[in-house]
Image: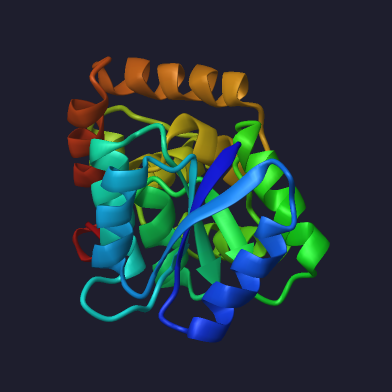
Length: 220
């Protein structure tokens, strides 16, 4: 039985999702929450397999609640509920460890399918959100880097490596990078190893610190 928590400050949304999911024999909505704080507390009490988390909620927003849940209950899958695709929320959610996004206006059968795909370990990125991320990277990867500093350090990064570096700095995992850039996770690991080799460290935290210094000051 898949245990699910639904967090949304709109009662109609909570109850609608609950009705859809409770129709499935192998799914059980164990709790609904009106804000991020309640969602976080519910995760500790009910230990759900999946939390469907709205972003904009009172008391504590969905991003902060997700970070707490991911820190204390890392195996819990968190899908972000959204009706919009604003860059700042996408990036914050992905960097915070979101396992995917669920658009609120999708068909009922797609809600159930999305939950099942999440349980199978898939990172769920609807096309509209993937397009936003791709657009954001395309718009920034050319001029984010301090070319003078790269030259002085004898560093050269390909376009693909630059995209991966920007996502590493944002806090994306290898799996998230793979989905965002339409690559296999193994390929991403290979790219990351090459990047680490170029900057001279195998420690992810140290690598990110070094990579931040390679950006122009206004982008750090």
